[in-house]
Image 1 (cartoon, rainbow, N blue to C red):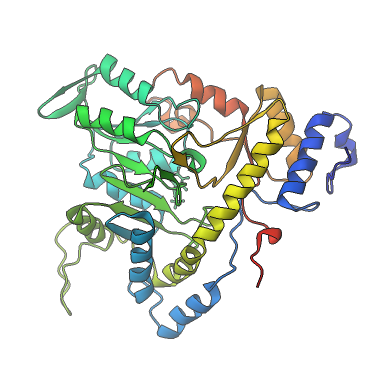
Image 2: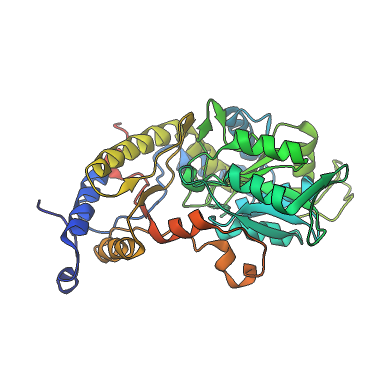
Length: 404
Ligand SMILES: *Cc1c(COP(=O)(O)O)cnc(C)c1O
């Protein structure tokens, strides 16, 4: 098979496995970038982005108030089916506020997965709580209900005051499942375990805009859910986030806490608690409105891409990671499982060397220096996935552009 390896340094090709080189060529054909650099996930601006941003500038409302913020929030609520969406400055800030709103406080513990982006743990740590790192499922790559139940049954007790870690006496203040790469995790099971133990859920749905379990959107299963609109996510506001809520009261509290806790008044500065300035600027919301208009199209193209990848990997010794049954993933980042760390690393070298951007998953959070002391379980699946997964170019490319 002839393979397009772009500007690959010919000296390096010598040591590369030919099957991995061929795989790089096949990936390039699928994404339609026969040569040159192919990013992992770059944003595309094929809609009303310029018009809306220019309109925000013309209105002079570029900052923390403006019509695009309201429009962005109502578009999000409508798309996700959440009763409210509260826009904020980024996903990490949204997580921090959501955790605080469900009662996470200094000295408590928050159960989450070790296989996640560092923001999940940072948001927990910034509330003064400590993350507890649990293992993920072997198919969904999200928090494992089995691991959650095992940790609770082996190490915790519950009473009318809530759930507590027996050895340290610390309160289990929340559980934060994350939908890895946009693949929905088992929210129904996680939610019923947490309900049994009286533990609130904040869903880190930062990667999961457009992902659903049945017909219900990710981020709407827990007390609160959080989305990210960073530049590398499926839709972007440049930088931004949103808190999803089905409870009016929690949504109002989220708005209040992200906007300096200012009481509504035509001129007076009355603030009633220590809060944050985590507002999403109107300028960014304008970009976001234009992006959300294209979301159904982005989703369709990305799901088609995932199908093409799945088909490609059917005829290889490697497996493409697919949504679990009953769910619909946005395939934000497509992932493939190699047979060993060595093989995966050879693929990373081979693909990146030719300008085809691929990445290993995040370093498991328990192995980062600032989280090394945290409680955790055996993390068998997490460690295995960290060694064997590679993410493939997953954004939209020129060939995905709609016909005018
Ligand atoms: C992107 C991301 C975040 C944080 O979002 P920002 O908007 O970048 O702050 C949080 N958690 C996960 C899993 C993410 O991928």
